[in-house]
Length: 74
Image (cartoon, rainbow, N blue to C red):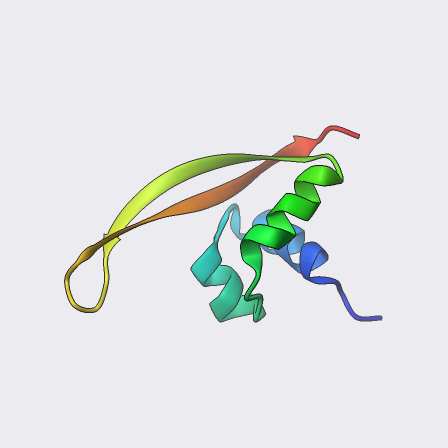
């Protein structure tokens, strides 16, 4: 049985502790990460979000969110 993208996100966070949209794309092939997170929230999952700043390959600063799973409220 194939895992859904939402299941992949939850499993990834449980295994690695957190996830970013880039990691979702790079490691899981998920291109609509924000949509999947929204759907998970609608199902009762709660996330802590933390802004991170890193430099891209051209040395410019980029800002993005890292998501941590808090719990499921349902």
